Amino acid sequence: MPSVVIVYHSGYGHTKVVAEHVHRGVASVAGVTAHIVSVDELPAPGADRSLGGQWPLLTQADCIVFGAPTYMGGPSAKFKEFADRTSGLWFKQQWKDKLAAGFSNSGNLSGDKLSTLQYMSLLAAQHGMIWISLGMLPGNPHDPATPNRVGSNLGLMSQSDQASPDVTPGPGDRETARLFGVRIGELTKRFKS
Ligand SMILES: Cc1cc2nc3c(=O)[nH]c(=O)nc-3n(C[C@H](O)[C@H](O)[C@H](O)COP(=O)(O)O)c2cc1C
Image (cartoon, rainbow, N blue to C red; front, side, top):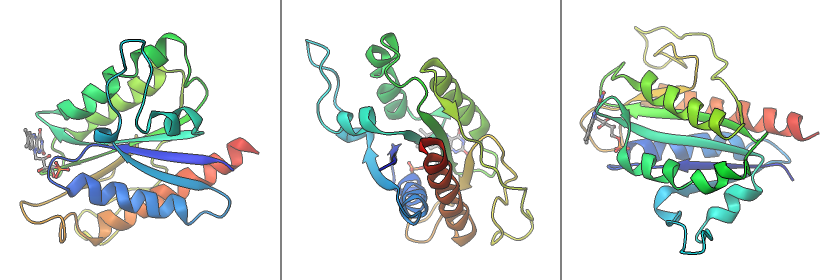
């Protein structure tokens, strides 16, 4: 069965909520398996370069979705640490021709999330992966309930206030994440067939 793995880092839980909604969208597509993995479950390679933890899930996946908060204008250090740990896989081009996509959450509406998405798409390109864009027309920026209110294209952008992840990011961003998951699941299925 086609499989999608969502790999994310979240320092304070907001990006985790977004990851869960992307996961929900992917899982709703019949005939597609969806997994969600925190970068904390992906340990550094062993002395023999072997990869333990949940790394085999990524090796087997048809699509890997990257998720990180934007910290200081780029992906969080923990996400970058995960990315650096893929260099052995890059060397053998073991992720070549898998599908890839990305999302980022930040405190400001822009918050320079584009930089994080650009980094993720470059990471995918280094691995020879095929990038899935957001594929949604811009929503109404004055109505936070509409999907893609931020007007992103390269990937999913969401915004959270300084409050609990129970309430922020808001329902529009959560729905955008779910719809993005549906798109990713459907494209993975089509790609595999
Ligand atoms: C170290 C650090 C750097 C941050 N840098 C940015 C930034 O560049 N742009 C922005 O909009 N928000 C920034 N923020 C706010 C976070 O992006 C925001 O709180 C986000 O929701 C955190 O996601 P998380 O709960 O998944 O960690 C920063 C937060 C931290 C802790």
